[in-house]
Length: 530
Image: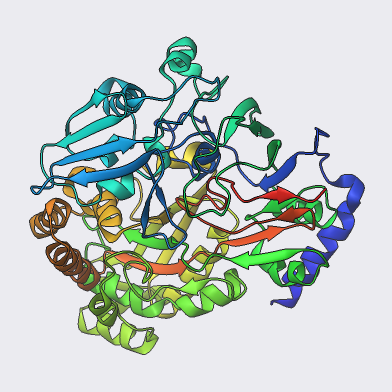
């Protein structure tokens, strides 16, 4: 731990004092969860934010659940399913005991309505593509849903476990219109909507009907009467609130504080080792300078991922030495062997051999162009230090990296432009196919394929893995595209960002999950000591 950072943290926490910690509204025995950012809305089909998903998983259910291993699909609203031999038709048999928060029984038509709303172009959902090439979805009786695809989609079950596929109440959606997920919500989750005060808190209450939680939990029923998701943007203040026992649980603790919290009596600190939320730098491969593969490969060789993981994440993160996370489904081990190793001397030689000669101020030049590029990113707790560390590493081999970080309110718009040469991003994923489909298909440009990577071989391999009906074909295709992209040095993988769940002495049954960044997932098994 850097001495100056440690001193600053201790001083900042001491200066706050218990009285300076934002007061938590005193409600009847609520479980108070702290986080650092709010969502723009809580309609599952309208927001891609983790801050929306982490609440939506408690408010709503999906056809299937994802286990703590981040790979295994479990029954939830669907108690079973069959897949046709051609991989195009999924038939889901639904539970018959499910009710919405208002007490209305859930039936197959509710699932059909929710899926069609998600995929309807009029809904303009930014995540509609995750539903796959949908041909039709229909109810054949009150408890059977047929999901028909135009072509096989190997990732369908995993995607149907994400919050975007939540089953919601048609009546409430039509009543609230654009204010669904803003002024109210009605679904079949273990908790029900009470209120939302933007940038402050979301209040939920127990769904009195709920007893159908997935079998990944010991108890299928919620045990907490009320939950308050409280926003505290400043991480030192969040830490102070936890220490002052003004809150019960968080997975947004600053990394510098993890060791300290492990020593606090009555506090439990747990890591979700299967969590996938990875940071990387991507290059716009059609931009001057970074269009040169030698520059991209040299950057991969010059940047010290291990040092970044240690300095920025205080040893709690894991350096990424492969395009995708090794924990992800269909990760290709051979692609990791192709990733350039940290070797600044070799990076400098590669640049020399490629015609990039050291010029004025130590910055390399070639054909009248400087080895200089601009990187965009969001201003958060880690990006400033990550970008500065990369900047220093690249400067040592003669590459100049200019940095522009944006507040999230404008940053996502900026990241959809062509103004920059490279960008910093963090993302969650469950499968390799999901990550590759999202970021590397030509049709995903200009965003989220911000690299402008348009390659027929990549598209063909992704299509092959996506439409495969057997595991061997899917694994082979996903592996081939990982190796291709690794050799092209389209990304500089940086760090796998860890999830650490910190819970106070009142809490029992806490276990970190992490699907799409949602540390508590359904919030089941949680109890408050009386």
